[in-house]
Length: 200
Image (cartoon, rainbow, N blue to C red; front, side, top):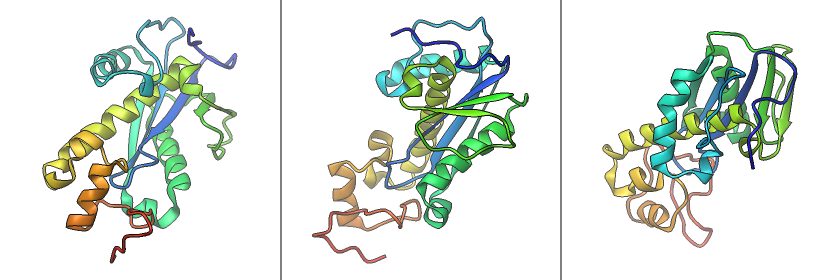
């Protein structure tokens, strides 16, 4: 399916998306992107449908050609404090705030969002596979979060975050069972199945 350049008739439409919402460790990361109406790239698609290689190819293209882009991490401590949905929305709001140009319309991947500075917005289910700016935001959110997880992997290599990026894989959960948790783990999440006891 060919992705559309924008949803609204506004000239500065921003797409926003997050990555890492379902992870057991690390931040939730969001990005916001305003693309020029002339933007076109046949490779650009939802980041979940792309290989790591193609995401890394697209990242500098998006950053070079975007009218404006920004990203924001919200760390595990704040996730535990305000919950993952609020943290995801806060990350998107912060990303939009950091844009060099204020958008006049916002399109959001998913079905949950809170109004930002009274700028009109639209939530779009699977928006990252329908609109180029949301797809671009999904790629930036994913690649910047992956870079963060690869960095903290060096601090705690036993969890293999450079591979699983903090998602609840069998390998990650086995490491939690063996080594316990780190400062990067989200304590408000179910880190192990109920049959295992984890002292936090």
